[in-house]
Image 1 (cartoon, rainbow, N blue to C red):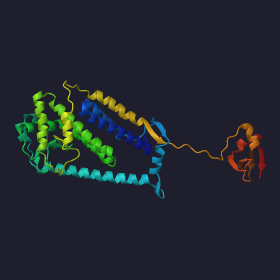
Image 2 (cartoon, one colour):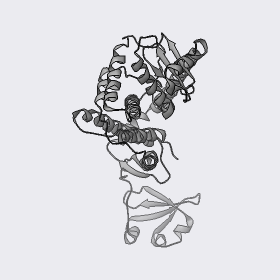
Image 3 (cartoon, rainbow, N blue to C red):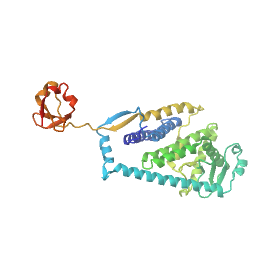
Image 4 (cartoon, one colour):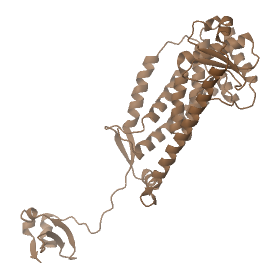
Length: 374
């Protein structure tokens, strides 16, 4: 595995194209084009895999770029001070920025984990009101004023956090079913993993768009999983609950909302509208998790097999000449110096062209050339 400027650049170009394709798919869906969320999720996993493998395989095929890559490469490798290049400075900024965002995210998770220690756990109460929680791996249900909407957000603790807002029994039931499905799917581990990529590639705009679309697709998947056995009437009630719960969310930004959180409603109104209007197929979906995993692995491993390399053709040296064996005797001669070295000289310019070994001097065609002793 080889990590290089060309490999990282090719990786980012590939990811940018795939993120653009993903955004286009989600955009045209609202105009009647129907896409199953599994296909969109497949593209997400392919993008994530490409960001994880920003290097070349030993068998990687190199595409030489003469017009685009050389100026980009030269720009980033220009010397700023002595032997320090612009790339060295940017790598240092990259490392410092990633360290800062990592510490900030860990501090945020620490603050969130503190809530489970200082707040009363109301799991038993909610299990009595909602029996489907009894057989789950849920560790806690907490109510607190710091959050404006229901969510789960700590991948290392299966707990649901509810705001201190008034919800109907039906709304609470849908909220808990939704958040429980996130826990069953291990979605928070996926979101935490994506957040680590955001921390590493904090300077790359495409990774933020990827995170937003990935969150949206996970919500679509959970919506389908929760409602797949509902009647049409109950499905409609679920969608109405999405709207009614969203309307109760204050406009203020949550104080401790982690980027790994999964929410019953998405705070952006346009995403909520797309989520409600997204196509749900009527037939029961079969589980193709393993079958989908195989092409994902193949695509992820195959994408680093091509990389763009900067290439600048070598400029011909006007002093260089190519002679045939018959021309050598006419245009060249050999000088034997006092130091015992042999050099080829041009008869026309008298310039020294190349050095040759003593063994070569004694072999054809050099034996036919004039030998001059200094």
